Image 1: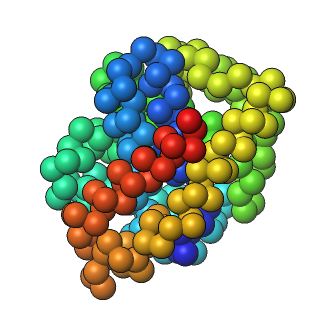
Image 2 (image 1 turned 60 degrees about the horizontal axis):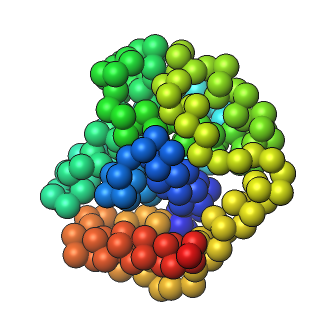
Length: 231
């Protein structure tokens, strides 16, 4: 959180969007929970990027963008050391693949891309479109949905885009946004639950290496509190 509060908040929202999308697609509760975890950790590879790169994502040179494109590989390799996260590794590694094969890191297309990664990709893009970010424009949620639909079959899986996981009419969107905010505030009120640099917090050591037991506790404590707030 301290290193990059924008990515911190973004990850919490992508996690919840991913869970809802999984449910809308008819996935079972366990699968939806795994997508939530994938959304939480999809950008964990960015802990190895400099603050300068993180704060200038809208105005990177080609060389700088090539560096940023390594973050899915870094994240997947980083999480590989935790067996309990094995199910979410494909979503973390491939969340920047695109349906037409134009994405990274492997250039996969269509159904070659794991379904979890296709879900996280749509949720990641949606939140990026509607969020206020340095040097980047912000869309209304309904406009973002139109943008996603216009790229269905090109950049994104049409089935995921059409899942209809959130009602974007103004009143309903406001209630949804307030729910996500409540989850985030609950997480922030508990010490040791931040999603900032691993080296800066109690679940990691000075070398940036996660302590598995503490990371597991963090993930599942966040999930439990989020569920109780929603109920």
